[in-house]
Length: 143
Figure 1 (tube, rainbow, N blue to C red):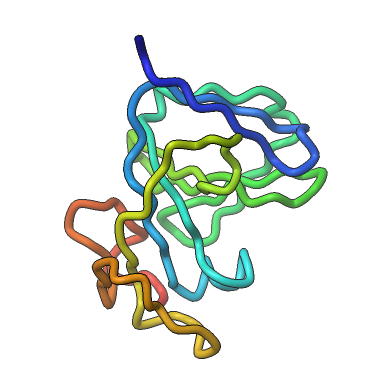
Figure 2: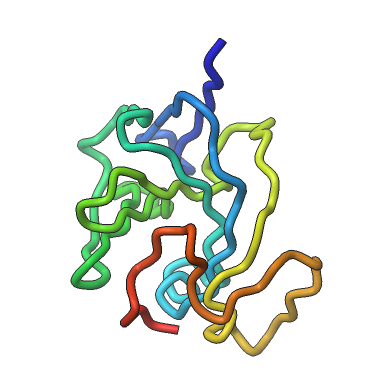
């Protein structure tokens, strides 16, 4: 049986489900993620072909850079997705999944750009910038 995970924005105008295994949760501390969420992104990812979205008329995409876009609900403002241009995978914010999510934390990226008001003390691997096996914004990504 294929793994299925369901989720939505805060108001429910955008719902989604994924098929198949999800990557572990990666915490991104770059300035864009920090400014969009107020803290940091906690996201998993999935192949685009394994993501189904309902309520796409309520979904807006913001081109936060020249190489990636961020998807959010136009009604409630919930941050939901991050996708690098041309990539075959899309990141999904872990908090948007219905419980139980079955997700587990994996690592931190862009810790060089983290906020100065918190400490990372969970013992997970930390990377000053990206991590070689995770698609991120690019070499000119903001920290």
